[in-house]
Structures are given as structure tokens and as C-alpha cells.
Image 1: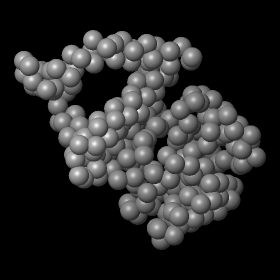
Image 2 (image 1 turned 180 degrees about the vertical axis):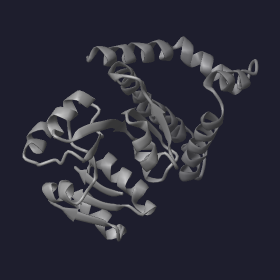
Image 3 (image 1 turned 90 degrees about the vertical axis):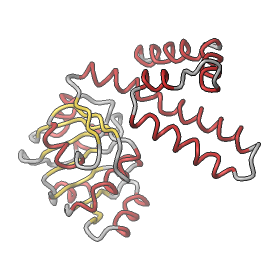
Image 4 (image 1 turned 30 degrees about the horizontal axis):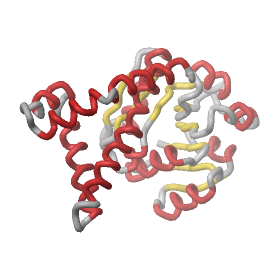
Length: 243
């Protein structure tokens, strides 16, 4: 494909790194110049251009802008009716993106995560699943959502990633203080959590780790008694309410 990317922040840059080896011709915008220059340096099939040149050289366009600034930036550009547009903006609906890119059509909202750069990442999307899968589905797991309400709920729930990372990091620091290899301590816990959750549903994993009096059961019960589950639910409810 001839792919264009307007806005090269962290997520858009990770996306380009994840698909650059698939033979596409990719043009990225000059916004976030350091990211754009790094992509062009690392991949022979990635070039940097101004926003309008990105559109002129592309058939499929990713929008990696902030939802707040996108209307102003996109209003200055000329989209073609045949452009296929995929938004990476979680704060804008398909209908809102469609109004920004007319006469082109907003085909999908797609929300990848930084791990898409290496593959094996979860990808949320709403809209044209065939298009999204054709670009990122070979090496990532695409979760197709039914409507904007579904997308909003998933956006709230995905925020669990940061607290989970914090918990693993805290446990790694605790372990590092008691071992002579801090890097290995964190690497062990990251591998343990990632591999365990990747292959087993959470309920089944908890049951498998529920040996009476075992370390896992005792720590889980301690944290449940401390109210971590209730605090998580309250936090997700606040996100859903926009607080």
C-alpha cells in the first residue's frame, strides 16, 4: 500500500515501525520531527514530507493527531474521495473524523499500543475490520468493537495497563532490594506475568494459583482485603463518567 501518516507521536511511530517491513511505501509528516527523522533513517521505504504531500503520495492515511488540534490541522488539507482514512484518535468518533476529512471517508478508528512496534499487541478498532486486519492483523490481535459506546468502555478498561505495570514495577523493586541482579528481578516478573496471562483466562489462572496457604493465594487475599479490587472498580467508573 501507499500509506501516509499525519502526526508522528509515540503511537503513530510505533505503528510505522510495526508495518515498515511489510513492503509498503510510507510517507510520514514532519510533525514530531525527531520521530519522523528516526523512521526515515531506520527504514528505506519511509520518507518525510509536509502534511499535504503526505496525502498526495498516499492511498491509505493514518491520523495520529490529538483530537483537540485535529480540526484545525486537517481543515487546511485537501483530501481525495478515494482516500481511506484510519484515525488513531480515541477522542473523536468515526462521524467526527469523517467531517474533518471530507470528501474522503473515515474508514476506521484504530487504537494500537506501543507493543505494535514489535508485533503481538492488542489493537482496538471500530469500522472497516478488513482494512485494519490487512495492515496490522498478521502479527497483532485485532479486537473489533461494535459501536462508539463499546469503544468508550474499552478505552476506560485499557487504562488498567498502567496500574498493572506499576504493580509489577513495585514488586520488582522489592525483589531487587533482596537480590544482587535488579535487571534480572524485573525481567523475571515481566516474563512471568506476560506469559501467564497470554495463555490462560484470568479466572482459570487465579484458580490454578489458589493453593490453600500458598504464596499467591495469601498475597491475593491480602490485597483484596486492602480494597484494591473495589478501588479499581471505582476508578473505572470515574473514567466512564469523564471525571
